[in-house]
Length: 127
Image (cartoon, rainbow, N blue to C red; front, side, top):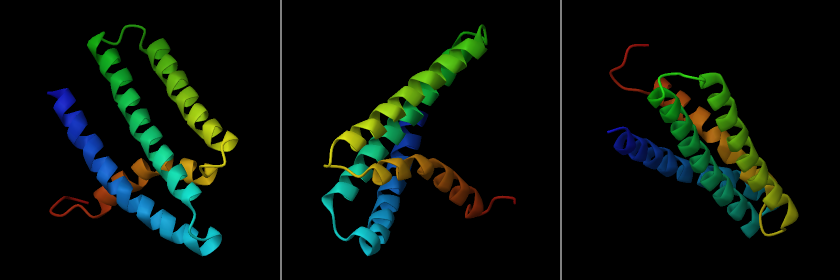
């Protein structure tokens, strides 16, 4: 059942990220104009953010499944893998002019915005 919940949650985050990408792109138009590089950066950053959340879920699932044995080292290992993946994506955007590095970094903040907005605007919930 956890896999189905993960798929639903990642799909919700992806859809909301698309709207945030459009907003970020429209804001960037005022500063750098209509460029394909910003759109490519936002797209790469969104894919990296989704992959990061998937790996985080996988890491937590493995720790729970093992009963918490050596959880500190497993958490640290998962963290290092996720940070290396983020560094690889951001480095990729720095080396190629096809994508904007700033655009690739922005989507990594989307989960914070999405979950905060969800908590603030949740209907029928207790504050």
